[in-house]
Image 1 (tube, one colour):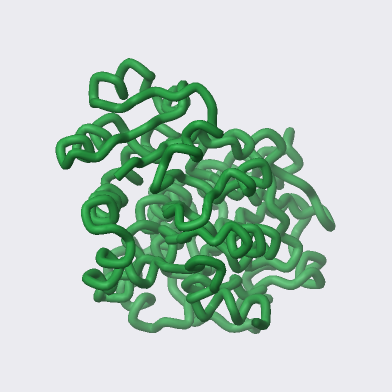
Image 2 (cartoon, helix red, strand yellow):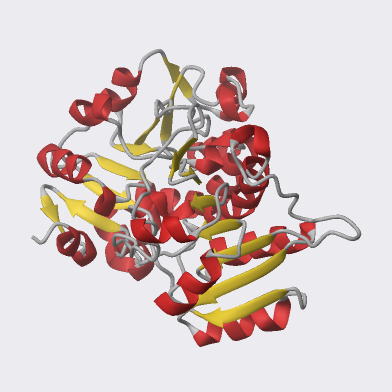
Length: 361
């Protein structure tokens, strides 16, 4: 199979869809890998690294899309790429269709095979291709939240870990999934007081078992959320509904109940966000302020640490890329029920129910 790795063109997205090690594995099976020139530089991988691994370097993104039977990338195609996607071409990437009607319509029109990393689901119900980026984003959420709590960037002026004689900062984590647990771990490591909310008692019991005593769990409901937003300095939104739009757990009216300088980091922004006032931002311009509450809603947080993120992503995507390349998408998804759940749009038809629900189709 001819496999293309284009350069990511989303704002400040420095990850790349494949490491040289991944290219090397694919060429061992006899596949041809085309990579756009300089595509890997942001992640610390250079054209010569890819050449040594067996890739062929192409100059433009149009050449990569034009020659490839399968495109492997990181983020959803941007508007510039819509016209480059070809009928029957496999596009394997993060799509998050439920948060973008324009992207959904464009991919329907392209009649391509859209396989979304974020909906590939294993036998245990976990999302193996979303997990590593959720781990990165959860940990980064605390890094970024701690920074934007500083007064020069309009935060409350709180040091999360506190100091002797001064109470530590308070972190509220919505969701005890991968993002929430990683965020809680990082916040706890800094010495912050952490409250983590979820509706899944099994997850809360797990958190209670593995986290230190200054991480406390509570059941998630509107009453508890309204109670805690008044006293917490940093709020992490880490709620995920597989393939669907995230629920608005914090509404616009709740912002007035928060203290000025409270920081919200909404990691669920890719799926529409779990805060009503969430709108996607970029690493170039990451925050905005509503009712004196700082919102950090960067839609590709792991893109800020591309070396780590690209390697973590290739670790989990490569086995599926090899399967798709060796068997073709129809046989691969027929044999692998996990991969089959990654099918979102096939030759102009939405085949994933949560996307239909999002747009009332």
